[in-house]
Length: 107
Length: 115
Image 1 (cartoon, rainbow over the protein chains, first blue to last red):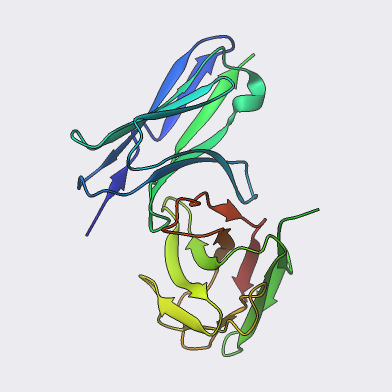
Image 2: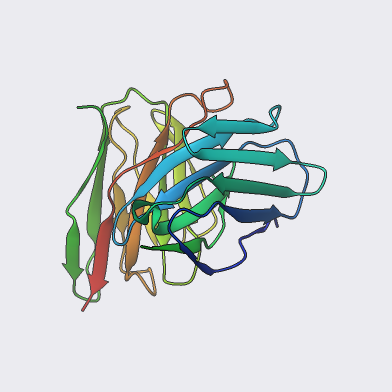
């Protein structure tokens, strides 16, 4: 069964820093990968979708990369802001979700 | 406004009762999904439907049932056979999976508590 792992489970960084969130998956099958953010008690908000044929996607201060050979995706957040505080989840093929990284940006 | 609506936001159920969670989308998306989210666990897929009048079991379908009579609606029934139904339930949709339009969108969720 495919697994998706996100480490660390929680991360705190000072405002203004750049940071990287990690997502690892156990197989290299050709599936897309999507990053979401979730605020407490809310649904998921789509951030970026990387198609299986792509290596990265960018939106504003966010950049997501996909390396199928190593089974990894990273979400890069530039110049972090307190409003970025949330739980970030990655998902493969709308089927397998990681448990998320809870990010806290310290003002 | 286009989007996915779920109702109710909070739902309380007595043991032994069936309850139905509503999910409606006006995005004209083909595929719809139901997940449950428990503390410390990732989302787990309950059921999904890629076309009207057709649906497939996900990883944890036991104790749940769905219908897809209309493209915009995908209600989930939590039956009394579901052993541990207390959870946060999320509905989602995708425009056209497998056709390059794969971004998934989520509703705001329904929190079900069994008393």
